[in-house]
Image (cartoon, rainbow, N blue to C red; front, side, top):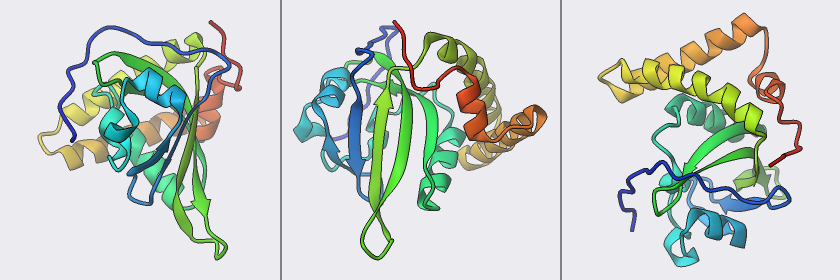
Length: 181
């Protein structure tokens, strides 16, 4: 049921005290989406359940950020990230995502859980040029896999220059969990 959505320049926001929640299986297929997710993304629950979470991936998002996200959660670690998502009507919405693996009683990963809050505007202003640079690097390669690897290398180089981990970088942008309108 995945269909091509053309991005528009319309931005959608949600309230400071709202949290977008989703759960996926180990392959990233959506198993749960809360009402806020459904309202903001403009998808019906029947259209989301069983679909890859990438159904809401905005083309302005560098693929290397998702590589880092997947590397982290598949390794059993949480990650925080700024993500620009694409609604079913083409509008975009920014989130400050906290993604964690879900474990069973044998400490095996059985899926993933994501809580997303409204990010601070200053954090988005700071992350957009970084994402543009990563996207440009990725696009400079004809092979998408090579482009993602090059973008990932650039991201790691940027972090080394700042002497920060990705988590430290994300929180340095002003996203200590408090959103303002």
